[in-house]
Length: 425
Image (cartoon, rainbow, N blue to C red; front, side, top):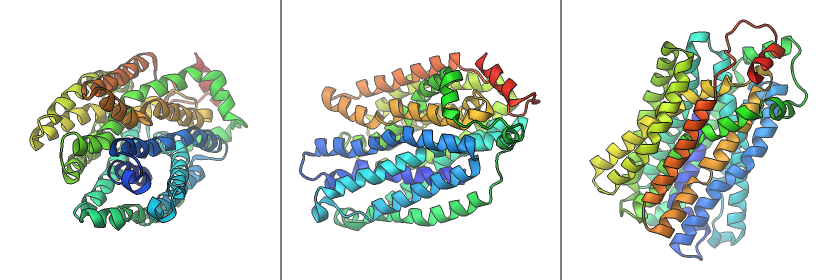
């Protein structure tokens, strides 16, 4: 959970900076609208590298082990984030500034391609039968902690004058990442290897090319996982990234107001996600599927409610809109780690999870802020953006109907080969 919090801290501060300052610092020679589009495009570019990271880290996660792979993903993310905090701007080195920004952003995406899914399955595989849901949800709550720290850092910096914030204030959250990464790396060095992976090694079922086997025997699970992530991915990145520029540029709110709204939602994520994961364990394995489908259906409606309440420009009602949206979102992400992880056999689980999550984020989360900005600019209305969020949630609900948990981690083992046959069936 702590490692995931650090990863999402690094990822979230980039999203906030892309919405608030990067258009002026790295793309100054265009209009505000075009500059915002270009800035958010650099946010989306990281997702181009995620499939490569998923393939590489998925391979080593299934071949060498979960522990060492997760150490490398965290280190790369930290180095890239601190590098962004040290970057010269366009006024200092010209076109090299956005080029270096894109490169470091690609490194972030490469890292996260193997991090998120690996952290989830590491916890699920290490949990006892009746605590898998809570353990998986607890990891996902790390995203809330990361977002909390990221927005606290930017909220503090937003108290500076505009000149100071754009000169040096925006760099501070990126540089603080160095402290968090050192703590995270120390913790990950002390982890024990996943017992599920140890079992795979014990029975001699480690695959030379796990990625190939995933696409040969588990392609259906990969596709369903990818579409299943559409609801949470699109809702999350529009709510925490696009909403900042939308609130400031369209609704006329201050940076501090929008950041504080997002900040309140992190508290909800931190508390509600583990609780729903705990409930899923008490209600039984099939409950995770029901919660996932139900929350996806709920997200089809909450996007319209959220935008409607934002239009009031009244802080209390805007906060209520965020709460309604995030309650459904939290229920969705609370069950996805265990629900998705147990759709794959242990010998290719890292590869299957990494590829599925990456495809889902590429077709959903990666372009969500960009699509929202383009739709708003073309139509002049929020309705199209809400419809986009609703459509993504519909795809996720359908995927949930078709996907099932097939491989209970704690089930009595026959052999890992038998485990794979049950999944394929």
